[in-house]
Length: 262
Ligand code: DGL
Image 1: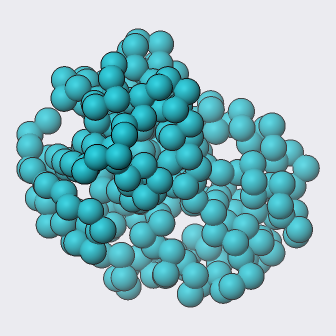
Image 2: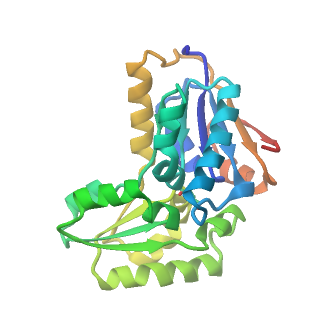
């Protein structure tokens, strides 16, 4: 492994670009390769066996492209497959999990909401973290069913999204939550709509920045951080790239997008 190799990222689709943006901000000299496995989205409704299979496919493609570290930019993939990946591949993996620890720690109303996929909420890793940090408070867990396909279709401001969000979030408000954990990397793209529903007194937490910091720490520790050089960013997607291009269009860095069968 050497400093010149790119950082690899993958997600069930375009949601992990919310993590990619934080990584590019914090590590501006690193090259990146991002895989959007949109043809298999959503992962959240699949079995753990299937999720592991898809993560293996994505990992092998990123390794064949010479990545020095892999960021699993998907809560569902992390909570279901990261143990398997770490046991089977000799490359460092960074994962993302719903940030329930800070939410539980800072909640004054002692009530927090967690919006995530079925795959994440039913995973053993999530159960373990929840048991550790939330036993003394009220947690309202909600599957964000239907949201990922709408985001993949570029319908973040649609009435379908607004109605689903109302159905999912209003019951949380009745429990007086003061923190809402976004447990899926697609959901940060819904923050403007979420904010309209929950108002300004609910703290919305996503883990993007924390993942970028963790990636930086691991690269530093392994002496794999790249020196000040111009960076290159490549995206591969196995469906139409229109929504992805729209999401990235105001990006501060230049990038290439390729539609690829994988
Ligand atoms: N971005 C994925 C996550 O963080 C979406 C999951 C899905 O495809 O259902 O969980």
